[in-house]
Image (tube, rainbow, N blue to C red):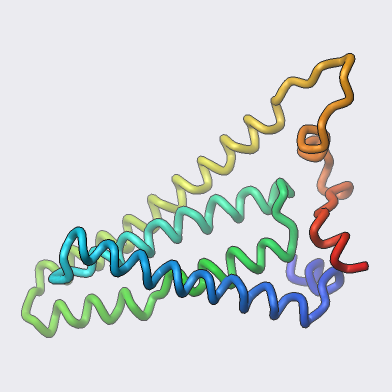
Length: 174
């Protein structure tokens, strides 16, 4: 996939997609973290746990859709997966939250947090992948009327991988 992206996208375009996604992911993470701490408190890293688990679910969902070529071309994939979700989730925050709990002497909470993060992340990936697969099945089985020209969205979803056309990438690359 990386070789395919490098032939389709300019280096500048890849960097801009990642930068824009990263900016939005960072801001989203910050605002969501504040909201979660306001609702649940900041004596335990609820915010990091919830953000990382939702990020894992979204990453699996987007990757499943992108692999099936459903509206997620190379630019969007870089923007969402590498930029947005790369900034939205972070292993270093998970590690810091765990170390802070250990330093406070909260060994059981630290171990629970680490296990919840790992198992929750794995379950979230399975959930995101399953949701992506269900979305693909649903979109591919949308009935079209014989007498009416099918809209772009339904004909687009029936394209094969070789015929896939990412409108954003094709328009912007000209």
